[in-house]
Length: 86
Image (cartoon, rainbow, N blue to C red):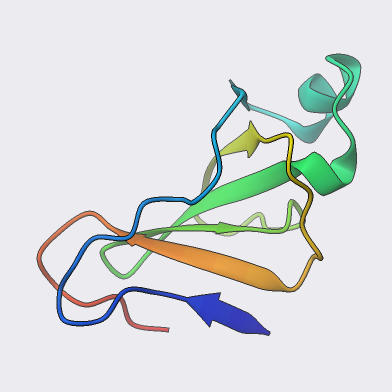
């Protein structure tokens, strides 16, 4: 598993342009997006974690991008001053 975070307290923006936000994977699929283009956004220890769409615990919503993912890479985006804890 690969986690990408910024060190030294800097905020890391999700590196891809978000096309659309959805409440369910089915909504994204019905809109024409592939599962590889759909990212789950979950709340974790003062972070938003963008990852594969199979996550359900602490799930906030799904976002879609034109870039695809490998179902093994995660991006942590801090929402407070504290360091993300993985």
